[in-house]
Image (cartoon, rainbow, N blue to C red; front, side, top):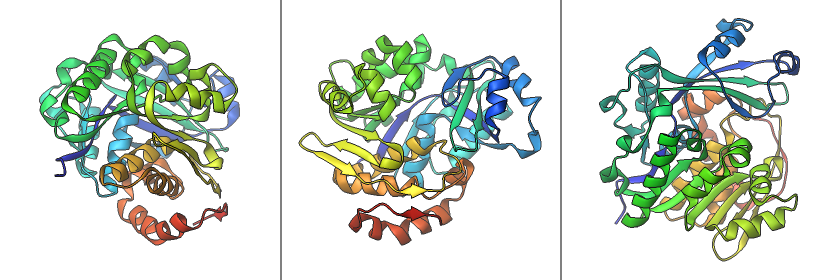
Length: 344
């Protein structure tokens, strides 16, 4: 019997402000390119004062939240746990989640303060650099966990960014423990190489005795295994989870389903913005697994999904066009493993 939710996501609730910048802007303000950095509100405002606010794109964000939106956009049922404040930014987040079909109880547990914001800077090479002020999201904790809804899910999905605060880490650890106890399949995304590098102990506490599935990109996998050999990184991951999905950028993805390795071919694309691509991959992948697909089919569909949008807000907003493109090209991608240019 199918459960009420395909995926139960746990992560920070943030509202993203997305702007295009040149590499020189990052250099001028000494911002490490391609990473996520925690900053205060003053730092965000300083940077915004030097950027064209009228060109900013705004939408609800947070790694797990993005993935739950992807689950819902592709016909799945998703629930999200996070923390917002009773302010305008929090209302933007709640409104966007509701519009995208993601279930939640965010408006039942407001925190005092300001809802978290993330400034996303996209350079011409499509790389995204994030400067995050967690706001009240830093306070998300075990008080936000909803065991009843968790028990009604096929998969639990935890974002690695939760290692950034003690209360959030406590929530992640308890969610995994509750999920195991209820027979819910547990999954984690490493989220960012800095989370792996600098808060390794927290990441290990989430993994505990082992998870059902870990998502990461190639750099995160190498950092976790403390090696420059991807084969060695895969061997390390197999000691900590039953299965994994490693995204490889334009080279596709490398999967392990608990029995065999599966290579998903990549495609050459004219990328405009890679922000949210990993979140979208995980969301579609989990949705397919929850509906009974095998790893190869889930991986191919997820790899196709991340090629379609060229702007993150289009990824989150243009549900109809995204679904239509996906429908038109999914059959071809499932049967044709070659690499080709994809410009639509």
